[in-house]
Length: 62
Length: 326
Image (tube, each protein chain N blue to C red):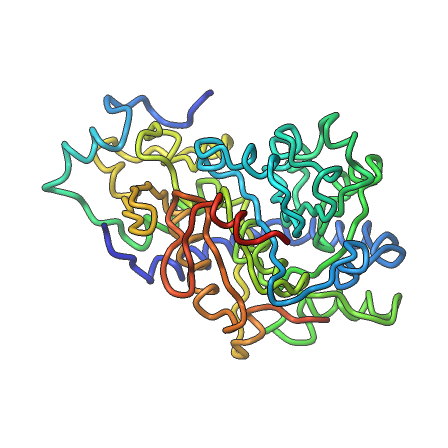
């Protein structure tokens, strides 16, 4: 399958983890949001948040 | 295990808000095109009448996702050979595999498929001869903003459709999409529809449907991993399963691991890897499970993945099937 990524020298997480385990960089808030925007989030849907917390679990009839 | 950073969850919710309002005009069009069908067909709150469901304290539903554990643990084979007589709630992405592996509405009479996406792209989850062949025995729960092309396929296959609202902006009051569409529907049919929390994905939505709409007190999860296998290729993980081919993510190879979280699941004694989307899904799902009512038992029989914690009972799927007959 065609990938959007440049080929990396490591094929799986185990190899990458081994090479970076002592110097693992932190993900910033901006990087996280950017990732969500650019990746597969189109298959997601918005979370409903409300002051009425019980409504967040759904409404029997709207 | 790396700790969860809850700042990221709010960032993800903000990002989804931006993404989805790009499609807002399409949702309005979808709703308008679906309105006659919504008016003439059924509210999801009537689905138990069609299932001939008599709910008691032992009643259960099995929510089937399409996570890697489903195949790895041969759960469909196990289910197809069982005499389980409860409700099957199949996420759309798993439907074709589920049917092809013998979990069919001929054997399991209470068979529901769920979709939440308002996009045409989910046609691929339905267009197949096996879906067509069982179409008139399948009940589908769809949001009022479902893509009309997807709806048309289900109609062509004679699938019985039941409608719901997906909550997203009701908190914004009388000008909200949720409020306005609910009033339009009530003006047509003099009753409302159930409105569910999506939890951002169809697996979590299906869990909500199981107890909020079907009303069962025992909800079993299979194929709901919210994570990747430890040996999956890094490109598959970081692209969320090659989900979006249109957009490019090209993090420096040295930094790829910072997008991936390694999680140990103590209930099943295994590791899983999560891209940021799965981190968001699982933390949100676990939040809602922890807030669910005391009468509800959420049983994770996935035998893998990352769904464990407060108010989640983990067990082998074979043990669930031995304990729950309906």
